[in-house]
Length: 326
Image (cartoon, rainbow, N blue to C red; front, side, top):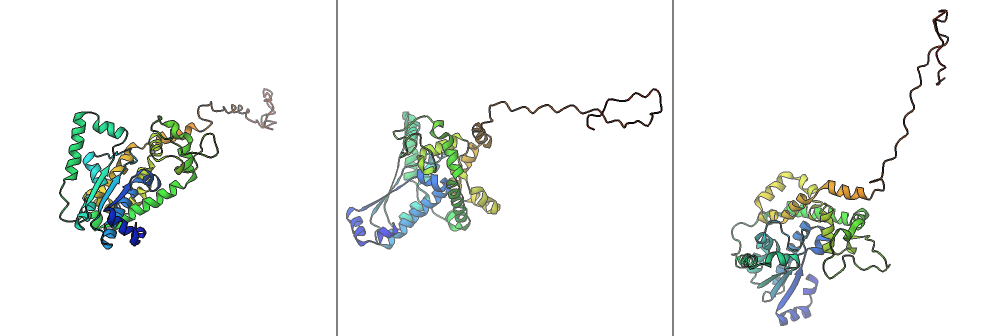
């Protein structure tokens, strides 16, 4: 964006069409950097767009922010309901930043697949969903003190950056790709118009060597089936335990921080290490086969009697059996 806006030709084009459209989503971004880190980066990008447009005198543009969802919990799957979901996609601080610069915005979002059936399946559901949309669209801009996650952003920035680095390491780990590919889409019902695996040039069943070879939504679904939604929480714990008091305090005082961390909370609730261990154990050839029996230990030999015995001179002494260990 920054490089493109340096071009006077592109700026002239934007002024001519009067609109800039940006598409966001959490499918691929969450798959590669983790859901919570992606949340932080996407919000930073939106705030950066405000600064760039103001710098180049493009405040008269209408900015369309289109969000396709695709979160790690499923399309639009915020665990705390529609109101929290809309604040997650369209944070109050972002709305306030565009308004402060006088930049008109149009926020668009999609309801796809089961997300649409759940929210618009009956007239009552549709009425409630549209009411929540209207409440968010016409909500007053935030006033008063800024959210602590922005005013005291050092800890949060370090936490998200650490989680991003940790998740990048996981994504590049061959063992993670092997885990995704061991069962892969076989764990899922066939849905959608596109195959779960990306095309392979080698023919035959596709071998997943990297998460990029599995489409984003099946990737998320496979992790849930394995009881290991790593894309929702991996890497956060290490940063949180470095400053537990700061983490707990920010979670308590910052609505935005708590809204983003709701995904990690839900991921932890859906996790079960024993389920993951069970799947991994099913790949062990020894699982399900009778364990080989060890041969019974031989009976202990009779004690070695000293011979000749000290009572040799006794007529009634009977020589014992020879000692087998001799």
